[in-house]
Length: 290
Image (spheres, rainbow, N blue to C red):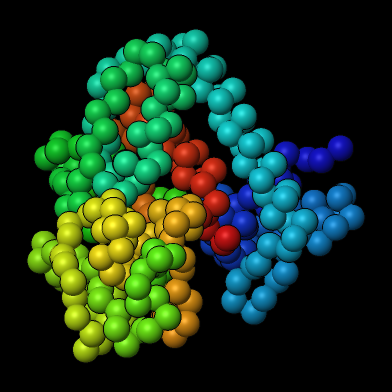
């Protein structure tokens, strides 16, 4: 029989990408994580993780086991939530702020699942590119790209959003990089790192237009306006787009869940935090250590 504690430690390694990161997330020592991982591999008689000098990389079978481990973890959390609900019914309104790309293309479509499990919690889901203040109650929970430095907040890294360079399969200049025109972010995002990344690729080549959100960039790429830097969450799933790999530097943004420390134990807010964590954990293009 497989020990759930061993699986839980393996899951932490897969999500953090390192033994030390897993140890921090589980609040145990490095040796415990290593021992639990080794025991699971022995019980299954397979190598789940390649231990590299500074990271851990899932093997082929490790990726398959990770899929099942995520499901097991979701099931365990579901049991715990049902037990909590039996003692204290979850009611109230929770304000969740998240980047527009995650609201539009991930979180909103999973709302029926949340409603089915928590029918008495009204989730107010706001797509916001700019940061809101948790201390001023502009939101109860926030999903952000990058760490938070707001006083009184606690945070947890949920995943990593990678970006790539994309064009329509029928873009007229696809085979002639010197003629590419680029779709950039507008001035409200002028100081963002993704803008610097894209303009660094563009160099002296022209910018065809500037748009605010990645969803708008996706529409423009589909319309063959030019080449855009899109989250792989969008670009890889669109059959009409091609990803341009040649000479494109890697770029990504970490996805963090943030809540004010005074609210993190509120049952309704806890339910929303668990919901967001599970949605992102189940998305292969956002997983840590993928």
